[in-house]
Image (cartoon, rainbow, N blue to C red; front, side):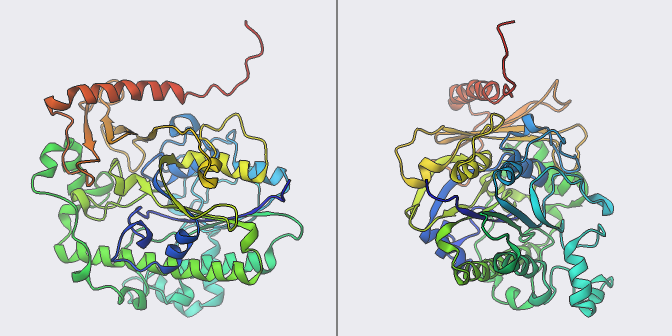
Length: 478
């Protein structure tokens, strides 16, 4: 049996699937990630299990759907009874480490999320680049390494902000430095490693070091994806959200000027390019240490960003592809031939994949499936659906907003639940992604598609039954 491979897991925060050249965007500069994609397997249709951070990241770490692991919203602590796949790897001899964001618990107002049995020997936690918990490892480093820049960024109203710090002091650069340090001298000899580099970019606020922002001319960037009257056929909630993001806690699309929307897109692209350069440094370090051939490199993101499309900003109860479809690239030289895969894969598939590649016994609690067959090009039977569950998951709406997405074949169904889940009226979305890939024509109320909608809703019921947690062993007939 071949030795267990190392795994280097590179994850961004709030990166749309189309914010990469390898996914067909000619306007964005991502040469390092494009090279990684050319050398690995690119999944064209990877869906996360929730369009906001914590529930999505909990699905990654547990291999379970939101309705099963119970971390249904940002600001909720994950149950200490949940099983982290990294602990299973550590138990089997892996040296596990993490730098950056984790977000499996509440981190608001300076709170540090509680530590779990996560298996990480190295744990350099920094929820984000902004002032908060005293346990933020990035802030500790920045105060020591660049006290002048720390003071400038801390000063209210100054020219330097946490997002626009010089590259040498930027959070994304620090993530790469910490990862390179682990690869070069921080890992345990004789053990395979699983290391997580969790970038915060391209999450808002929208800013980047000047040398990156200057690379993008707003006039050359693609226009926003919307159409006149789009909100009239969308669920009523979307008009509300367009006026105020995060249930009114942040500026909505309607409050931005056209210039501000253009600037946000340019800054977002600049943040992605900054991450790309930092990934390039990490990959160079992997080569320099002679580790590339023995390491599975994975690049992905926890969810997307509306970025003005469909007359929305940021994230929330949206299931457009720009919000819930993310990049997923997996490279293992000599083992995974370069390919593009069109299957519907999900973030719950990653935990069982890592255990499978490591030769660790599968967990009965996992609800995803290993991607090994798709990675090696085997003739693998694969599910034909993907599920995303929003359960008032971002800033809380009143009445609550609960929505469930089912992606199947050429169709996307999104049910916005009514009673008894919420006092809101039941409504929804239905898109034919073959004829309408930009999801501009909502066919939910179209009589010509009533049968399709009913079939998908029935399939959704079957899927929800299929993902119920029945992992506890049955000991006897009674």
